[in-house]
Length: 121
Image (cartoon, rainbow, N blue to C red; front, side, top):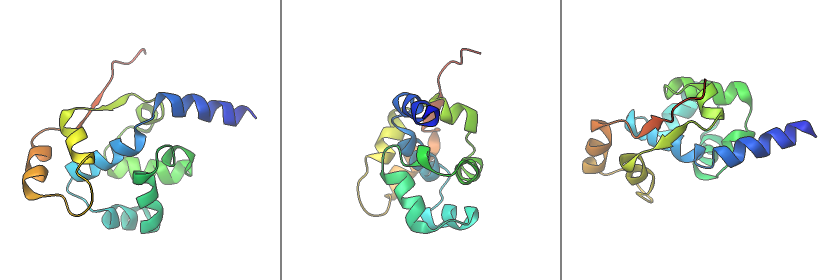
């Protein structure tokens, strides 16, 4: 029972977790298939991590940590909801279907689409 309560608290803090991993993947110039292959998970599972809000927070901890390592994101900050998208990140995740255009990829690669909120530590 306590685990469900903790999940609800994490989910309410981090409603854009799936958008953060997508923006960072695009920023690093990786495809979904490449990230899935490097972590040893199926492409469809990784696709759901990026597509469905909250799905990544319900994923296996070690699996998600491998994804975060590849995307150069800190697991602690990720699960605490400290990563936020900036304007470039929102452009990257709002692109829609199909391949990311060359111009969008260049604009995303000029600056990191994700920033970190000030920590209370």
